[in-house]
Each structure stands twice: as C-alpha cells, then as structure tokens.
Amino acid sequence: MNREHHRWYSPSLNRDMQLLVFGHAGAKVIIFPTSKGHFYEWEDRGMMHGALREPLERGWLQAYCVDAIDEESWYARWAHPGGRAYRHHQYFEYLHNEVLQLMRSKNQNPYTMTMGASFGAFHAMGFGLKYPFEINRIIGICGLYDIREFTGGYSDDFVYFNNPMQFVAGEHDGYRLDAMRRQDIVIVVGTGDPQLQWSRDMSGVLWSKGVGNALREWNGWIHDWPYWERVVPTYIFGHD
Image (cartoon, rainbow, N blue to C red; front, side, top):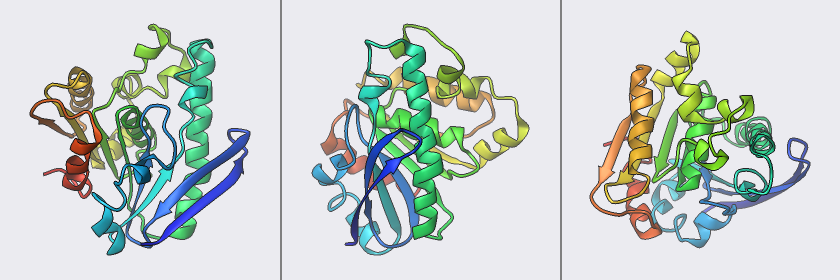
C-alpha cells in the first residue's frame, strides 16, 4: 500500500502541519482524528490496514489523514470562545487552501469526501457543508454538530459560519443549497450513544432545507473503534 508523510509550514496557521496519505488512486477522502487527536491516529488504530485496506490497495480510495488543532481552538477553554472560533476558521482555511490543493495535485479524481468519528465528525460535517461545491460525500460517525456546546451559547460570525447546525439552518442561497442537495450525507450513531440527539437534530435541520441525508442508527452504544471498524466499510462508498 502506498503511504506518504507530508509536512510543511502552513501560512494559514503559522505553524508546521503534517498529514499522511494512503493509497495511490481513486476517490479522495479527508479523514479527521477524534478529539485532540493527530494525523497518525487512524493508522495507529489499524483502520488503514483493516477497515480500509481493500479499497486503498485496489485504487478505489485515497485517504488523507489530517492533523487537528483542537487544543488550540475549541478545547482551549481558557480562551474567549470568539478567539477559539477564529483559530478553527484558520484551520479550515488551511484545509481549503492547502490540503485540497495538495490533493488535486496528486490525484485528478474529482470525487472528494470527508469522514470523521466523535469530534472528527464535527470537522467532517462542518467542512463538507461549508464547501458543498468541492465535497461530494460526508460521513459523520457518533458526532457533535452544534459547537455552542463548547461556547456556553456564545456566537459570533466565526462561530456561526463554522457551526453546521447554525449555518445550515440559516442558509438561503439557492446555489449553495442545491450543491448540498447533491451531496451524499451519511450520519451514523448508536441508539445508546450520547450523540444520538445531536445526530437526529443535524439530520432534521438538513431535511428542513430539502437536503437529503441518511441517518443510520445502530443498536446500542457504538462510540468506540471496534464498532467504527464495522461502520466505515459499510458507508465509505455511500449509504445502504
């Protein structure tokens, strides 16, 4: 299996950032780590050589495992929520202006996905819906989708436009809504997970805007890697 490590100084974040690439061809997927996780998490958890091994080796899929800066943004609880939201905005600028550019240079396949579990699902959903013209499929697993849980209810433009529960509800641009309606959006959660209502709420807000999505509720508690090893290959190529 092709594996590449990339590191460069990000002008968007004013710091070095790293990522791993797995696979040599196929549809591209940005994979986000869990809360305060790093770019090597999915590899360390065996997902690249387990749940995703076949599509990566066969050239059906190319994965870009990105780093996160959660400890500098939403988890920096000592900082004002407006500053934390701005740091998250810079992170999405890094993804949009730098990571997507790398992906295009390495792989001409136009189909691009985002995927994440736990807090990674917030990133996957937020980035995918913020850039619906560039992201074709979103897979959110056991996620939080309203960041006001982290801001004590505080909101400003940087919170609002990076919080999918808010900006989708307030979206009135027909072109953007049409682009969202073309996306394949999969929301997976366990019926025993604390994220169950957040997932239902996100699905409901999308449907209220005419944006179809597949809410898949698995029986019981599935907020852990052994369950995600089954979830990921089930939905990586679309909902069932």
